[in-house]
Image (cartoon, rainbow, N blue to C red; front, side):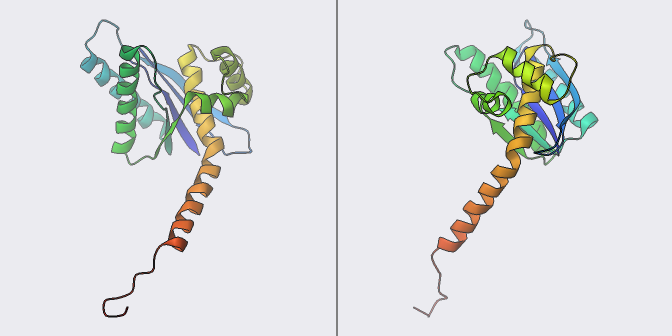
Length: 183
């Protein structure tokens, strides 16, 4: 499985590609940050993010895209920019027919460190260990993008089984519809 993780942001949008399967050693295929000028207008910044993500999709050809789910913050301006960058990542993936998974920050932290309250340094340290890197990726947005991809690879099998079980339950408990005339 090859996953592009996206840590959305208007100024720095972290991107990272991880390859592998749950229960096996994972490999980093690429990591970086799509940057936009803080003084540019929001629409221009969103176009730059789109171009950057499209380049990553072209170069790395992931099978899935994992995006950080936007969570409520006190700073409305920050959450709006994050949501807009997140939407661009989802749009780029959908345009290519790639499945998109949204993971909350605490879900990613728990998957990678064992604690949903881990700080940026702990996430970076565990990403470094898990991917057997020489040093933590910089800036933290890049490490967070890799953590998203790792989280998705590790959670995808369980999530898939859960979705199959829910679908089977719905089929088994669906009301029987008799043809007209037979009642």
